Length: 151
Image (cartoon, rainbow, N blue to C red; front, side):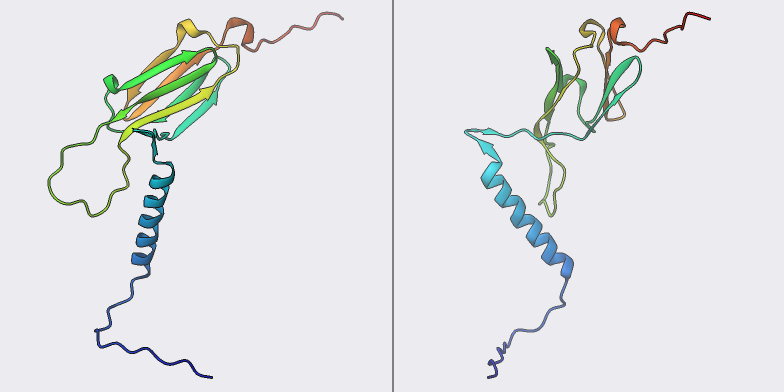
């Protein structure tokens, strides 16, 4: 049995597969915001991209924060948990948004470090949109070479 063909008098437009992906991406984003976008009256914070590396002397945490001012960032250490939080402020814009992928609003990044950190010597530097937090290790935690005695 053949199915009836649906005909329309509307002119055919050019099919754009990327437009369908953009529509799907927008619908998914709206769905995610409706499910997890807000907690009570507050907007849920997002986490910026970050790298954590360990050297013999310290732990280095590099967080990407382009366009964020030094005064809008807070770095805290509570026990062994390093917390970096702040806000990316929305700029005053003219015109109508056509597409938006940059994040604005509150952000938060947390990492738990080992027990061997020297909390009194932590340094944080912001340069070229990257916040670098250097958390030195205690003297007892630094690697040492042991001399071998005997014949």
